[in-house]
Amino acid sequence: MSPRRSYDQYCSAARALDLVGDRWTLLIVRELLAGPRRYTDLHADLPGVSTDVLASRLRDMERDGLSTRRRLPPPGAAYVYELTPRGRELLPVLQALSRWGQSELGERRPTDAVRAHWLALPLLRRLEGEGLVEIRLDEGVFHLHVGVEDGPVYGDGPAPGEPDARLVMDAETCAAVARGESGLTDAVRDGRVAVTGDGTLAKALREA
Image (cartoon, rainbow, N blue to C red; front, side, top):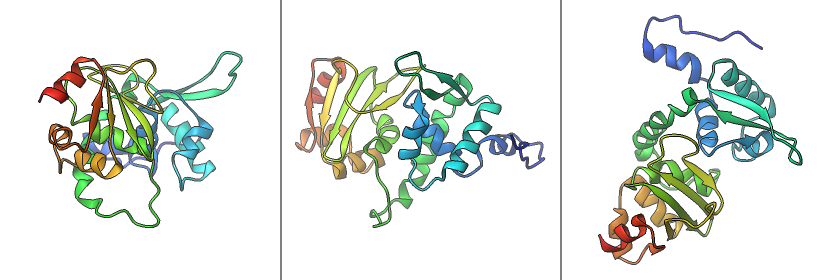
């Protein structure tokens, strides 16, 4: 394992960047905020990262106490990576970066990869309350754990169990809401977002 590189500056921002400033590290954190992930799943959802770099970043994160690796019991018997409590504390950091980077998105470039669940963290900022929300787009399905303080904050695929609210929209509407260009309640009233479910979140969105 390579020694940790450091800016050697007595500054909390510099110390933080000693841990998460390398290319790909924060995007790995973004993926692991969904909960335990296998190496192959991480590699598939981080297009452009080499296997060597991904393995190196995961080793560094484990060394620095940001993530752990454990073996699933049979019949899975695969290794998964997951964030430690210290690693999960990076959620507001990623959300702040997402907010700051909104103006850089613009139109999607032909070379841009996209995954539906990449909209999860910015969309999470637009929901209030607590509950499980499933988001359905033509590009894919993901779910959000709104108001949680521990564990996964989102997940790829349908919600585990019956969600408190299910939102159906197109990717353009989802991106506009995530960027703050359109309010979620406005999109519901305009018919751009269909809401189903009997939970408090669903009722609040329909009645707003």
